[in-house]
Length: 170
Picture: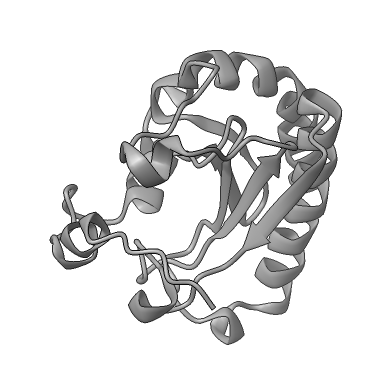
């Protein structure tokens, strides 16, 4: 087996959080959803773009309640989060037409959680050849679409999800 050395990652791993507080809890309360990158709210969940994406359309889904343990979610919160995940996958597929997707939930710092105090799902659209030598050799990720353009592309698809949730909760 070959090893790939990425010593620059140690700086990222050891640095303290750049933003005080929980980004999910903060973004849920912001008035400007575009600025906050929040695409939709469901009854118990929030769906937003990742500010530091691995690929265009990289989404984060989190329960609205600040919780780090999946097993501590109520049945309603768990069901809502899973439905939001299912619907978000369909939306990313319809909007971006990726060749595949990575889904992940990193529980705990050693598992890769950058925000370990508030559990969240990642949805990362993938395309053939989307990862090249740039991240390895130049410590640079090439993003072909600006983050706010990604927001504008996805927002109309999520409008129906937010509207549907509001009708159910009325």
